[in-house]
Image 1 (spheres, rainbow, N blue to C red):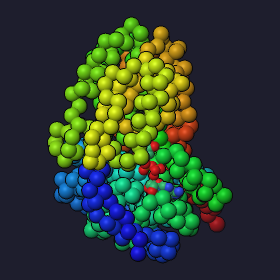
Image 2 (cartoon, rainbow, N blue to C red):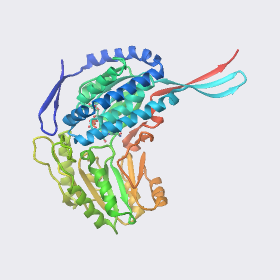
Image 3 (cartoon, rainbow, N blue to C red):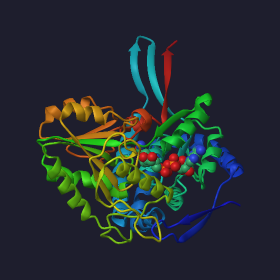
Length: 457
Ligand code: NAD
């Protein structure tokens, strides 16, 4: 049997070896999920909701241990692991509350003997291939509404968050979700690829653009519903009327939280020339307060880089920025191991010919660029192939709305950043993906509307 070795990215130590799937076991699991889907869909909504309610109670009861598991396998600072689990609870509440309404059959027309109805049927068996950076959030955005609406789920957690994936399955099953209505697949890209080869009714993916593009190519000819939540290069513009210190503190957190390994991390900052220098000094001062160290310590802010190869990406961006004339203000290199560590890094005097301002960094590194005004800022914000989030700091609401209207992104922020709400849709424009999760639309995404034309005899 295949084995998946799990290493602690903060120490390099081997922490577990898990039995992994192969093409044969993936096919067998897909057959089991298919058989389990119809009975699960036939289970009344109230019972499905009760299962997810019990799952929530299970997460709360084990929150500290689940946070420690996630921190050990991803290097995420422990307080941020706890924050993620607490945040998940609010999302679960939202999904449970809204699921009923979203799946109820709608009568949209009655005239004499004729009635028209829309029924919201489950997609069927859905595959969820997931990322490691927020395994509870990005997984939960899919498998919770999918299960509530009567789908069976084949869940492939990232190979960097596989123990968390197994904990999710254990808690769902303990809560009453039938064993084969939620099945976990353990392994890397080969297991993900084997999953794509199965008969599935929907593919919900969170991960990099490169993998997303491969998935789209593999599934395109098969007409399977595909949703891809991919990377970003999220910009923020700080106007001259903003408070430079307040904006700097918020954006330093937005850039470096989770060691910069968030899909909606602030990855580019444009600052009006009249407050640029004040903003930059406040930003660097804030970053210098961020403590790097043992992710299990409650006061650690900068944790490990989860995937070792990302260190090469960060190093290459630093070298490229320096070679093209950027000014390094703090950080700039790996921290000594064992494990995967990178200093929080801030550059000023950057430009769009640098990889730092064009390619997703996915680490604790940021470029700050001086701009002359709104027109230049909007042009630079839109100069990207991505479009996940974008923000503006200004005192002027009308100006913010006008500028954010012109920015190509699925989510926009006024005087805030790096924020996700269960009540709002989460979607990317351009190379940030297709489809959406969260909000009531993110429940409907797991159903297929069926049109009923009913004439009484
Ligand atoms: P990744 O693309 O390397 O891996 C994601 C998943 O795809 C993993 O489970 C992996 O095993 C699987 N996979 C790899 N190759 C495959 C293949 N050929 N076929 C099928 N599956 C395959 O991404 P990652 O490193 O896990 O995650 C980081 C990326 O995810 C970043 O780009 C980040 O921005 C993005 N992300 C986006 C969102 C969002 O909501 N838009 C949220 C979190 C992360």
